[in-house]
Amino acid sequence: MVTRIVDLRSDTVTKPTEAMRAAMASAEVDDDVLGYDPTAFRLETEMAKTMGKEAALFVPSGTMGNLVSVLVHCDVRGSEVILGDNCHINIFENGGIATIGGVHPRQVKNNDDGTIDIDLIEAAIRDPMGELFYPTTKLICLENTHANSGGRCLSVEYTDRVGELAKKHGLKLHIDGARIFNASVALGVPVDRLVQAADSVSVCLSKGIGAPVGSVIVGSKNFIAKARRLRKTLGGGMRQIGLLCAAALVALQENVGKLESDHKKARLLADGLKEVKGLRVDAGSVETNMVSI
Ligand SMILES: *Cc1c(COP(=O)(O)O)cnc(C)c1O
Image (cartoon, rainbow, N blue to C red; front, side, top):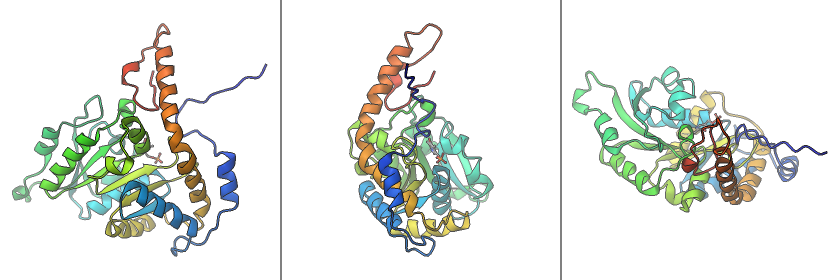
């Protein structure tokens, strides 16, 4: 009997496909710290275009992508970022924005669907007149899909409204888009449209789309120039990263189109599991590739 194990711990446990390994083996590489790696350049160019932003930067992890992004937007110690209390940056990233960046996290309640009420965001924005006492609000962070709520999607309407609010108050908007392709596919909204209101987005290559390593951040040319410098400061400047970027290019090409089927399977799994006595599964809230029990 052949036993086939399907590993459903996380979308991070995928192994590179044959096509990814072949692309890695034949990747053209050079020193990316010096800015010469052609495959990194190809990945960054393609990601910038896909996300509708001016420029992109490969980073070793989503955690570094978020840290670099927050720190570029909050370039003065004592800056404050408004974020959901149940978001990845707040919970799973070792408090890096505070410990490394001197950025104060203003935590606002996340709803079960991953949103934060717009009026609560607005109420959390500091009055600049109180600068003798208050940190300075610089940034709002959203997360799409929202991991801790089970991979729920933030709609384009909601994202646009938060973007308008940020603009009105002279703030930046960062999206932790670790699974932004999942959100785009599930919502049926092109990914560049979905993140149009954002000044920066961090996208994981090694989650739903199955590349072995890395994330990409996107934003304006000016944002990415500062991010490149900060990446180096944090030890994230790496040399022949074309090896990793080659696998990511295959992931983008081959796997984004498979996400819809992932989502269908997740729903099927949730519907089945909820019939199992003793398991509690909220099958109705499975919108993308996560099922929690
Ligand atoms: C995984 C994840 C990250 C961080 O990515 P790493 O590559 O694990 O550092 C950030 N945000 C969300 C929502 C994630 O799921």
